[in-house]
Amino acid sequence: MSTPKCIVILSCWRSGTSWLEDMLGKQVNGSTMFGHEQQLFPLLSMMRRCWKKCPTTTRKLANKPICDIEDDFHQQMGVKFHKVLANTRRYSSQQKFEQFALQFINTLLAQYDGYEQVVCKSPENLSPESFDVAIDVLSGQPGFNLVYLFREFGPYLASCHKKFGDNLEYYAKKYVDWHHHAIEKRLLVKSTNLYVLDYNDMVADPSIIGQFASIRKPNPKIRPNTVDKWKQSEATEQIADLASRYDAEIAWISEFIKCDKIMADNS
Figure 1: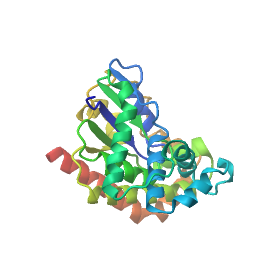
Figure 2: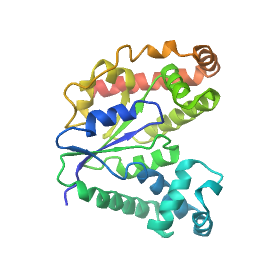
Figure 3: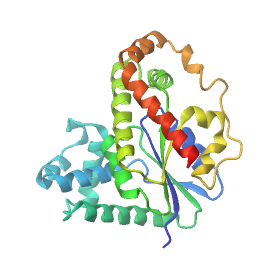
Protein backbone atom coordinates (compact mmCIF):
# COMPACT_ATOMS: atom_id res chain seq x y z
CA MET A 1 0.00 0.00 0.00
CA SER A 2 1.28 3.48 -0.83
CA THR A 3 1.19 5.85 2.12
CA PRO A 4 -1.74 8.29 1.85
CA LYS A 5 -1.07 12.01 1.93
CA CYS A 6 -1.80 12.51 5.62
CA ILE A 7 -1.92 15.92 7.29
CA VAL A 8 -1.52 15.82 11.07
CA ILE A 9 -2.76 18.92 12.94
CA LEU A 10 -1.02 19.48 16.27
CA SER A 11 -1.71 22.12 18.93
CA CYS A 12 -3.35 22.74 22.27
CA TRP A 13 -7.07 23.42 22.65
CA ARG A 14 -8.79 26.58 21.34
CA SER A 15 -6.12 27.24 18.73
CA GLY A 16 -8.18 26.86 15.56
CA THR A 17 -7.54 23.16 14.98
CA SER A 18 -11.22 22.35 14.38
CA TRP A 19 -11.55 25.14 11.83
CA LEU A 20 -8.43 23.97 9.98
CA GLU A 21 -9.75 20.41 10.15
CA ASP A 22 -13.01 21.58 8.61
CA MET A 23 -11.25 23.33 5.74
CA LEU A 24 -9.14 20.27 4.96
CA GLY A 25 -11.24 17.24 5.67
CA LYS A 26 -14.95 17.86 5.98
CA GLN A 27 -17.20 17.99 2.93
CA VAL A 28 -14.24 18.25 0.58
CA ASN A 29 -14.04 15.84 -2.36
CA GLY A 30 -11.02 13.57 -2.22
CA SER A 31 -10.29 14.37 1.43
CA THR A 32 -11.44 12.61 4.56
CA MET A 33 -10.99 12.64 8.31
CA PHE A 34 -8.90 10.00 10.03
CA GLY A 35 -11.41 8.10 12.16
CA HIS A 36 -9.00 7.27 14.99
CA GLU A 37 -7.79 10.84 15.37
CA GLN A 38 -8.80 11.40 18.98
CA GLN A 39 -7.00 8.31 20.26
CA LEU A 40 -3.96 7.81 18.06
CA PHE A 41 -1.23 9.92 19.65
CA PRO A 42 -2.42 9.52 23.27
CA LEU A 43 -2.36 5.78 22.64
CA LEU A 44 1.14 5.83 21.18
CA SER A 45 2.44 8.07 23.97
CA MET A 46 1.11 5.61 26.54
CA MET A 47 2.65 2.70 24.68
CA ARG A 48 6.01 4.46 24.64
CA ARG A 49 5.68 5.28 28.31
CA CYS A 50 5.11 1.61 29.00
CA TRP A 51 8.19 0.72 26.96
CA LYS A 52 10.31 3.19 28.92
CA LYS A 53 8.86 2.35 32.34
CA CYS A 54 7.56 -0.65 34.19
CA PRO A 55 4.86 -2.58 32.24
CA THR A 56 3.55 -4.08 35.48
CA THR A 57 2.45 -0.62 36.65
CA THR A 58 0.72 -0.03 33.33
CA ARG A 59 -1.16 -3.33 33.57
CA LYS A 60 -2.39 -2.42 37.05
CA LEU A 61 -3.62 0.96 35.81
CA ALA A 62 -5.32 -0.64 32.82
CA ASN A 63 -7.52 -2.67 35.15
CA LYS A 64 -8.81 0.40 37.00
CA PRO A 65 -11.85 2.40 35.87
CA ILE A 66 -10.95 5.61 34.07
CA CYS A 67 -12.55 7.76 36.77
CA ASP A 68 -10.22 6.26 39.41
CA ILE A 69 -6.99 7.19 37.62
CA GLU A 70 -5.60 10.39 39.12
CA ASP A 71 -3.98 11.72 35.99
CA ASP A 72 -4.80 13.66 32.84
CA PHE A 73 -7.18 12.50 30.16
CA HIS A 74 -4.66 11.49 27.50
CA GLN A 75 -3.02 9.01 29.87
CA GLN A 76 -6.41 7.58 30.86
CA MET A 77 -7.27 7.02 27.21
CA GLY A 78 -3.83 5.64 26.51
CA VAL A 79 -4.04 3.14 29.35
CA LYS A 80 -7.39 1.83 28.18
CA PHE A 81 -6.39 1.46 24.55
CA HIS A 82 -3.02 0.13 25.58
CA LYS A 83 -4.79 -2.68 27.44
CA VAL A 84 -6.78 -3.59 24.35
CA LEU A 85 -4.18 -3.12 21.60
CA ALA A 86 -0.65 -3.15 22.94
CA ASN A 87 -0.67 -5.77 25.69
CA THR A 88 2.48 -4.22 27.21
CA ARG A 89 4.75 -5.23 24.36
CA ARG A 90 8.44 -4.46 24.88
CA TYR A 91 10.84 -2.91 22.39
CA SER A 92 14.60 -3.23 22.40
CA SER A 93 15.24 0.40 21.46
CA GLN A 94 13.66 3.77 20.73
CA GLN A 95 14.17 3.12 17.03
CA LYS A 96 12.30 -0.19 17.23
CA PHE A 97 9.37 1.53 18.92
CA GLU A 98 9.22 4.26 16.29
CA GLN A 99 9.30 1.64 13.53
CA PHE A 100 6.38 -0.12 15.20
CA ALA A 101 4.47 3.17 15.66
CA LEU A 102 4.87 4.10 11.99
CA GLN A 103 3.69 0.65 10.92
CA PHE A 104 0.73 0.96 13.30
CA ILE A 105 -0.26 4.36 11.87
CA ASN A 106 0.03 3.13 8.29
CA THR A 107 -2.09 0.09 9.12
CA LEU A 108 -4.87 2.34 10.41
CA LEU A 109 -4.53 4.59 7.37
CA ALA A 110 -4.87 1.65 4.97
CA GLN A 111 -8.67 1.94 5.05
CA TYR A 112 -8.38 5.43 3.50
CA ASP A 113 -6.15 4.38 0.63
CA GLY A 114 -8.63 5.62 -1.96
CA TYR A 115 -8.42 9.22 -0.77
CA GLU A 116 -5.92 11.75 -2.03
CA GLN A 117 -5.71 13.45 1.37
CA VAL A 118 -6.36 12.24 4.90
CA VAL A 119 -6.51 14.58 7.90
CA CYS A 120 -5.68 13.57 11.46
CA LYS A 121 -6.44 16.18 14.11
CA SER A 122 -4.95 16.04 17.58
CA PRO A 123 -7.36 15.77 20.50
CA GLU A 124 -8.16 19.06 22.20
CA ASN A 125 -5.94 18.10 25.11
CA LEU A 126 -2.98 16.76 23.19
CA SER A 127 -0.15 16.56 25.68
CA PRO A 128 3.50 17.48 25.10
CA GLU A 129 4.27 13.77 25.38
CA SER A 130 1.85 12.95 22.57
CA PHE A 131 3.27 15.80 20.51
CA ASP A 132 6.76 14.34 20.95
CA VAL A 133 5.59 10.97 19.64
CA ALA A 134 4.04 12.57 16.56
CA ILE A 135 7.25 14.46 15.80
CA ASP A 136 9.60 11.56 16.56
CA VAL A 137 7.65 9.08 14.44
CA LEU A 138 6.52 11.24 11.50
CA SER A 139 9.24 13.87 11.02
CA GLY A 140 10.68 13.51 7.55
CA GLN A 141 8.34 10.66 6.65
CA PRO A 142 7.16 10.85 3.01
CA GLY A 143 3.41 11.14 2.71
CA PHE A 144 2.99 13.01 6.02
CA ASN A 145 2.81 16.72 6.74
CA LEU A 146 2.62 17.96 10.32
CA VAL A 147 1.06 21.34 11.09
CA TYR A 148 1.71 23.12 14.37
CA LEU A 149 -1.00 25.75 14.89
CA PHE A 150 -0.27 28.84 17.00
CA ARG A 151 -2.76 31.35 18.41
CA GLU A 152 -1.98 34.52 20.33
CA PHE A 153 -2.34 34.54 24.12
CA GLY A 154 -5.30 36.96 24.39
CA PRO A 155 -7.64 35.32 21.86
CA TYR A 156 -6.66 31.89 23.17
CA LEU A 157 -7.60 32.78 26.76
CA ALA A 158 -10.81 34.51 25.69
CA SER A 159 -11.82 31.35 23.84
CA CYS A 160 -10.94 29.22 26.88
CA HIS A 161 -13.07 31.49 29.08
CA LYS A 162 -16.04 31.14 26.74
CA LYS A 163 -15.67 27.36 26.46
CA PHE A 164 -14.44 26.27 29.89
CA GLY A 165 -15.22 29.02 32.40
CA ASP A 166 -13.22 31.18 34.78
CA ASN A 167 -10.15 29.09 35.61
CA LEU A 168 -7.89 31.13 33.32
CA GLU A 169 -4.79 30.79 35.50
CA TYR A 170 -4.71 27.09 34.64
CA TYR A 171 -5.08 27.70 30.89
CA ALA A 172 -2.50 30.50 30.88
CA LYS A 173 0.07 28.18 32.43
CA LYS A 174 -0.85 25.40 30.02
CA TYR A 175 -0.37 27.81 27.10
CA VAL A 176 3.10 28.81 28.23
CA ASP A 177 4.20 25.28 29.14
CA TRP A 178 2.79 23.75 25.95
CA HIS A 179 4.27 26.26 23.51
CA HIS A 180 7.64 26.33 25.26
CA HIS A 181 7.83 22.56 25.01
CA ALA A 182 6.75 22.53 21.37
CA ILE A 183 9.26 25.24 20.42
CA GLU A 184 12.11 23.47 22.17
CA LYS A 185 11.18 20.31 20.27
CA ARG A 186 11.03 22.29 17.03
CA LEU A 187 14.52 23.65 17.68
CA LEU A 188 15.81 20.13 18.22
CA VAL A 189 14.05 18.61 15.21
CA LYS A 190 14.64 20.52 11.99
CA SER A 191 11.94 18.73 10.07
CA THR A 192 11.11 19.63 6.49
CA ASN A 193 7.54 18.38 6.85
CA LEU A 194 6.65 20.33 10.02
CA TYR A 195 4.83 23.59 9.27
CA VAL A 196 4.25 26.33 11.85
CA LEU A 197 0.98 28.12 11.11
CA ASP A 198 -0.23 31.33 12.78
CA TYR A 199 -4.00 31.48 13.36
CA ASN A 200 -4.12 35.15 12.31
CA ASP A 201 -2.34 34.38 9.03
CA MET A 202 -4.85 31.61 8.33
CA VAL A 203 -7.75 34.02 8.93
CA ALA A 204 -6.23 36.72 6.73
CA ASP A 205 -5.45 34.33 3.89
CA PRO A 206 -6.93 30.82 4.12
CA SER A 207 -5.15 29.87 0.89
CA ILE A 208 -1.92 29.76 2.93
CA ILE A 209 -2.80 26.21 3.92
CA GLY A 210 -2.07 25.20 0.33
CA GLN A 211 1.61 25.06 1.26
CA PHE A 212 1.03 21.75 3.06
CA ALA A 213 -2.37 20.56 1.75
CA SER A 214 -3.33 19.34 -1.71
CA ILE A 215 -7.08 19.67 -1.06
CA ARG A 216 -8.94 22.42 0.79
CA LYS A 217 -12.25 24.24 0.65
CA PRO A 218 -12.06 26.91 -2.05
CA ASN A 219 -13.99 29.62 -0.16
CA PRO A 220 -14.12 28.87 3.56
CA LYS A 221 -16.48 30.96 5.67
CA ILE A 222 -14.76 33.35 8.06
CA ARG A 223 -16.75 35.00 10.83
CA PRO A 224 -16.59 38.81 10.87
CA ASN A 225 -14.05 40.31 13.32
CA THR A 226 -12.65 36.85 14.05
CA VAL A 227 -9.22 38.17 15.04
CA ASP A 228 -10.31 41.05 17.29
CA LYS A 229 -13.59 39.72 18.67
CA TRP A 230 -11.83 38.40 21.79
CA LYS A 231 -11.40 42.00 23.01
CA GLN A 232 -15.13 42.01 23.79
CA SER A 233 -14.70 39.14 26.25
CA GLU A 234 -15.97 39.58 29.80
CA ALA A 235 -12.56 38.39 30.98
CA THR A 236 -10.43 41.08 29.29
CA GLU A 237 -9.14 42.48 32.59
CA GLN A 238 -8.17 39.04 33.87
CA ILE A 239 -6.53 38.24 30.53
CA ALA A 240 -4.55 41.49 30.65
CA ASP A 241 -3.37 40.68 34.19
CA LEU A 242 -2.22 37.21 33.15
CA ALA A 243 -0.55 38.59 30.02
CA SER A 244 1.42 40.98 32.24
CA ARG A 245 2.49 38.18 34.59
CA TYR A 246 3.61 35.92 31.73
CA ASP A 247 4.95 38.75 29.59
CA ALA A 248 8.49 37.40 29.15
CA GLU A 249 7.35 33.87 28.30
CA ILE A 250 4.73 35.10 25.82
CA ALA A 251 7.24 37.43 24.16
CA TRP A 252 9.70 34.55 23.72
CA ILE A 253 7.01 32.37 22.14
CA SER A 254 5.82 35.13 19.79
CA GLU A 255 9.37 35.96 18.71
CA PHE A 256 10.04 32.35 17.82
CA ILE A 257 6.85 32.10 15.78
CA LYS A 258 7.78 35.26 13.89
CA CYS A 259 11.33 34.05 13.21
CA ASP A 260 10.10 30.61 12.16
CA LYS A 261 7.72 32.19 9.63
CA ILE A 262 10.52 34.38 8.24
CA MET A 263 12.77 31.34 7.80
CA ALA A 264 9.94 29.44 6.11
CA ASP A 265 9.26 32.32 3.72
CA ASN A 266 12.92 32.49 2.77
CA SER A 267 13.38 28.77 2.25
